[in-house]
Image (tube, rainbow, N blue to C red):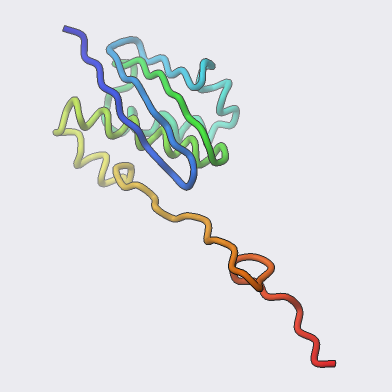
Amino acid sequence: MPTTTNTSGRRKTAVARIYLTDGSGAIIVNGKDYKEYFPTLPLQYIVTQSTEVSGSTGLFDVKVNVAGGGVKGQAEAVRLAIAKAIVELDPEKKPSLRAKGIMTRDDRMVERKKPGRKKARKKFQFSKR
């Protein structure tokens, strides 16, 4: 029976939904190869970090739908989703992923703009006269 699982990962406003199946290690993001979708090496490393740390490189094919946020937030959302899927299939790999900080959702978000301010905290210039 083929192994398959669906999970999601989030970071800032980016949401990644993944479909993990047995395969050769191909990662398809929004219909493109991940190296084409994430052109820089640091982003490619972030995407593949979950499989490398867990020792699952080349075992699974990953199909990803990702939306929202910027490219770094999207890459980190994909990393979390892949890690959650790997742990769902093999719970023994969770300690190694948690030790690298991959299992934790980074919940930092952009602070909202407040009324009477230029940005979230920046004030308009004060003039005494």
